[in-house]
Image (cartoon, rainbow, N blue to C red; front, top):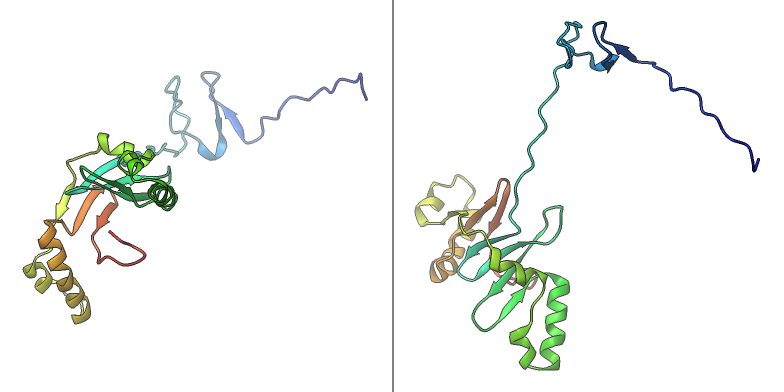
Length: 186
């Protein structure tokens, strides 16, 4: 088998047809009405669909005051970054661990701490739609009393910090304010 050459046969033209007026070849199950090359009427009913446009998700969006929403993966995962004049804190798990090691080792490096997400805040998008939570909007809400009570409990946090309740980062992507917890400290 060392010196033998394998000769492949020609591919079959099964399920394919050719335009009678030109050499354009098309698949029988996607037979076009007219030939795309010579406009000869073939008689099919296939109409090519427009490709869906890709949704534009900014890498970094300014959510409020000193809070930013930063893209962490190509799938659309995001994390929050809090940045003020003195400190910068990334809420991504691996970055929190790295920062904790930096804090434990020395205080000088804390001010200089940076990660890939913190570096993105310099190019953040500012023109996101914001939605504020008010007592009137809570009263109009047709949900149950428990949901209304929970929303009312958020008002002091939002009003005191001048934070919007919801920020529309891009089509279908929102940053929503919730009460701080051990899982979600922001």
